[in-house]
Image (tube, rainbow, N blue to C red; front, side, top):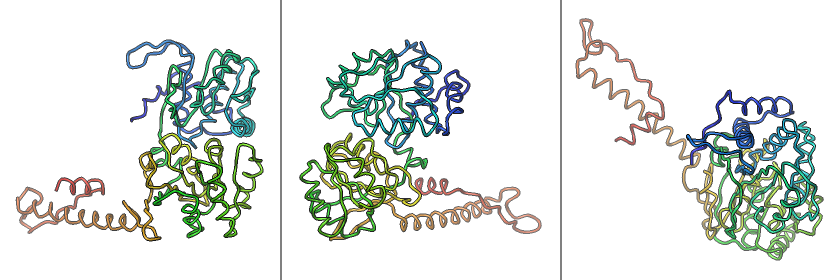
Length: 410
């Protein structure tokens, strides 16, 4: 799907975004500016979209991949609403670590938004004018219905990487905003390139054996299973091989466990769903994604796509039985399938790329020779034989893309 057209460069919403960005200690990316400008347009009043006049929106949802900076976009909208409209801002999320993250970002980047953070399960939230719902795919729940009624917001902004639910409950937002997807953000270098691995089976023993066979290949890893018992079974195998592990549950000391993992005291961290949202560790090298549908697969795999200078190529491991291979969402730099205890590469890899480059260079040379010979035989003025004998034909400056096109036409 093509991204929607960007707002006019000199429109009032774009001017507002530039003013907001100038006041914070971060330079928003171009797609972030476009998204914020569109939300401001929607919230500001009637607007014309494809020759249709749309009324002022009360709610909008921003769909943007994990690692694309949804927190930055939400805080810019919150800053605009507070400074321009005098709105009280309430920010809600399902998990406490997401609320801690937005508070930290608000202070560290100088947004200066006076916001109140509340859990989705809070039974007595404060009143507010703008309600920002982080991980908004959780919005279609009874607890959120109660929170909406208690906050009484005039505007609602949802943020999510996966605007769909496995239970098919609908998300009730009037407008949606999309821009760059995962595939494009990887190509543009905002998200990390990755290698994709496919293993035959996804059991605690199989996953542990895969990691232990090549610990340097997979490095610091996040492993997801369906149950806590599966997590503990896999951790027991790894610990028996002297690999420090942590199993994160809803009742464990998650912050301390994540701190140990980020310091490098723990090499593998395991969980069911707690770490699928709001877990940000750029040094993470590999994520093992349990078999799942599209939403969970995108959430789990997205944990590893944040760029890190010391980990230039991340890794995503899935099994053959998964319903949604992540390769359907984004293109890997290289792809491997487990075969006879080793890895067999499929698709293009570095060696194939080098061979392709050599073939294209050869095609370019052949094309130049071919065009020169045709011109000489045709006896065209300025190119054929003259009084001083044959003149050298000026070679064509083919690009590699032109060579690819000529190869296809043959």
